[in-house]
Amino acid sequence: MITSKMPPLLSLNSTIKSEDKYVFISYSHADSEHVYQDLNCLHERGLRFWYDNELKAGNEWNDKAEQVMRNENCVGVVFYNSENSFPSEAIQKEIEFYNEIRKDREDYVCVSVNLGLRNTNEIVRDIYCSLATSDAKELEFRFPQTRAELVLSTFKNNVIFISRPRDVMETGHLDKIIDALTEKGVVLGNDNLLLEMQKLSSFINNGGVLTWSFGRYPQRVTSNVNELRFSPDNDYETNGHHYRVEKKQVFEFQPVFWDYAEIDCEGVMTLISSDCLDYMQGGDLLDAWTKNAFRDAVFCENENEILSGEPFIAGSNFFKRNEALKQTQYSDYAKSKLKNGDVSCVWLSDLVSSTPAKQSCASLQGGILGRGISTKECAGVRPVIQIDAKKFIEYAKTL
Image 1: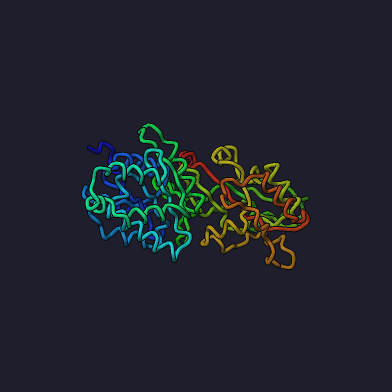
Image 2: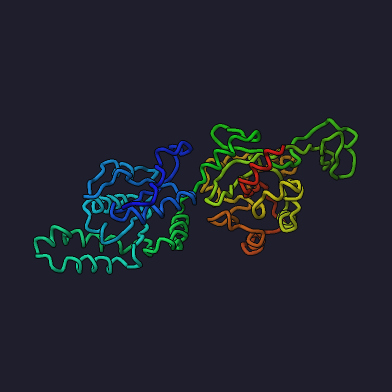
């Protein structure tokens, strides 16, 4: 009897968009108790998946499963392997489809979650042991040799193996599943929080790019405060407005707009500034980041509490993962610092690791000094920040 509640269906989630990536879940109905426990937990952690909720005992095959597996948004399969799944004709078809897709898509992920802390060979051995009293005809009917060979050959190479204990209280394997999928580029989501974020007054849907205003930085050149134009370079506040004077030009502090990149299972949202905000020499840039000068200039005390970690600079690897964010506009303040209007080499590229959440001031310093980038080289500054979405929502409600 299944006591675990059925996990939510991908197709019933109103916040799922047609371009969202997901994984296919392959399992035997007889293992539903353990599988549903995992899927409910994985859903809470932000993993998007599709599973056959109409699966019944008796190994019926749902033709829709093939369509789901072959969909370009399906990035791979999580196989829950056991003595129940391997003899299944339906599972055999799913394994065959996986192998076919893999021929054309080398990045198609396969995660093997083996129930009962056993490897594939041990599961196959246990199946044969359970059929030890069967004659040859029954053995071939219950677990055909071709099916056994398919299992052993498939779950051998290019597969991530994770053992799952039968103990329902054990959840360590879930971390391994999440880690294995994220390392392969599977993006987690937190759709409920993202939906709440879109209800805020600071939210703008900018041509399909989700954008929020947060913090302030000198951006627009202004002539409204002529008396400051010939003052020494400094920041000023007058009549409720904040200005920065540089090189006899006055720039007004304005709200910074941030484009959505991703939100993880913990509710940490990654955002990148919509515009290139500044243009700095490498040494000044490093100094600004390591001493939090940029952070203190942009965010007030309450906003600083919402940030998760330190701001970092978007490089080429970050944009490879976020194609829609490549186009860059420059604020008046950044343009004023460009030499001869040249914007061809404004990026400190390749400073961002494959996982933006792990980028830090230390690795930024290592990038400038360790990769041979001169501290005298100038670079455009388009920062990436990570915020606690729950804190951001609560803060926004007080404004």
